[in-house]
Amino acid sequence: MKTLSNKHTFYNYQFKWTAVTLANHPDIQGRSVAEALDIHPIMLYRWKQEMREGKLSDNGKETRSKRNLEEAQRKIRKLEAENKRLREENVILKKAERLFPGKK
Image (cartoon, rainbow, N blue to C red; front, side):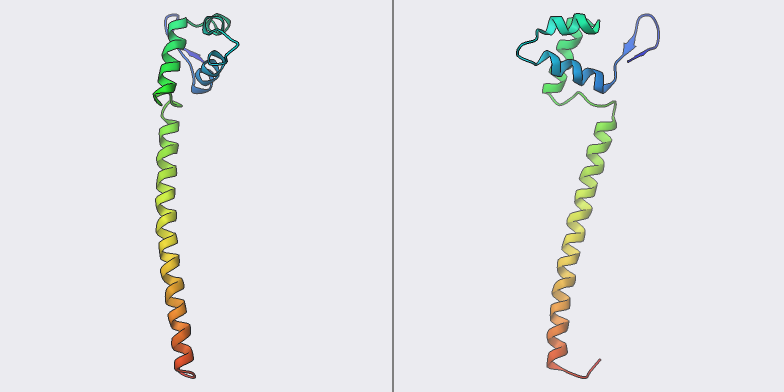
């Protein structure tokens, strides 16, 4: 949580996530969570809605992390395809070596 002035307070992702998780607990009322965390119940409701819609993020860090993960997955698929191609070429070369012994 970071206060810029006496009017605006910005809450980090972890704070919001914890608040929403507590408010979603079946034995805990959202209003009680809001009071305990000294936030307005409407703010907690908005965070719950953002989490349901997948909009609650770690100030862009989550988006960058997701993008990095997708990029890494693309690289892995590319490398796996290349590995498969090289293995197939290796099998062909071994067969050719058996057909033409002594030629290197």
